[in-house]
Image 1 (tube, rainbow, N blue to C red):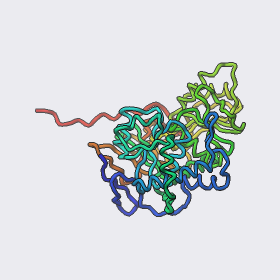
Image 2: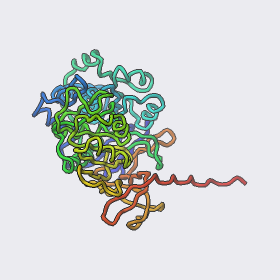
Image 3: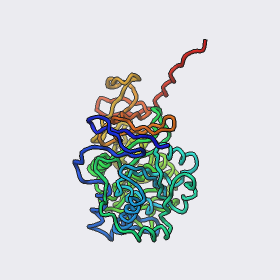
Image 4: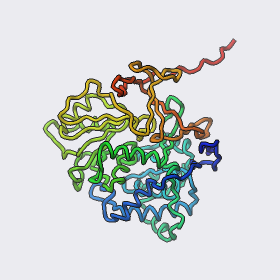
Length: 431
């Protein structure tokens, strides 16, 4: 069931068509994610955007294919703000699919390649999407759920190539929704989070300022389109670099090998498994630095990183809620003593972090409360699933991390254990 979506432009709620996540906000800045990619493609069309094993995708080829696909999506009925699912078996197809959705003015709903069954039903329910861009590998999962476009089928591209490019493209806007990330309902009953192009640009700018350019590329170690893949991908593209995808059992090794100054991006749990699998006497080709984004990072992972990659700095970005937009960050530098509290980090620009009591009031420095956050570098809206309807929040949400924390006197945030789940409200007692 697709329900009416309501979002606010600051002057009151604005009604948009069912199933749409379009925002009615002034277009103040021209740069969008797809516009950023187009700029790089025009300057360096032969540069490699994705290196996946022995296969690669150039910026020019990705730009051309995405433009063709975006035109076909518009002619196929995708309108501004419409959600479109991207569920592909390889990173090259996923990149083209995401770019096409953004160019068409749609909202990307990325789905990890391994997702199946009830997980897909929930994504359709929460997003209201009717179209999926997929691969032959993932196509069977959508046979009765959505209209599917198979991106590795030559017949699909034959039909697309026969159509003229849409002169109205691109239709994306800086303050329009770029991604809807659907997750299992959290403690607030939220089923998904909406992020606009502006939030991604703010997060990218902050990451480049603190960790440096990714013009030599970014290594990821998981199939598309996991939460950690998105920030890695756009970090590489923002700098004209290559997204390197090694084989599943290749450690950091890529084929062909990335430049020695490439960065690597992982989730904390994923990185812990990778480090654990490396033999004690094996030292993989060291990335320039490693970025962990997602939940809190255990101290054992930090210590193991120092053993395996002693020369590579480690940046730990805590990203709750949608799992892609960082709230806080901490750097562990080679040769420096590791801090007593490895979870003590500082908020990133564009994010306002709060530590609150159960009633929502701020707690004093040194006292423990639940960590929450809001700000322009975070999702601007949340989607709740209630009685089969998808309802968008009228105001920017205050995101709950589900973690306890406290402010330290040096201004850092110390993350602690999970926050207790609120007890359900007591209903009326039967006489």
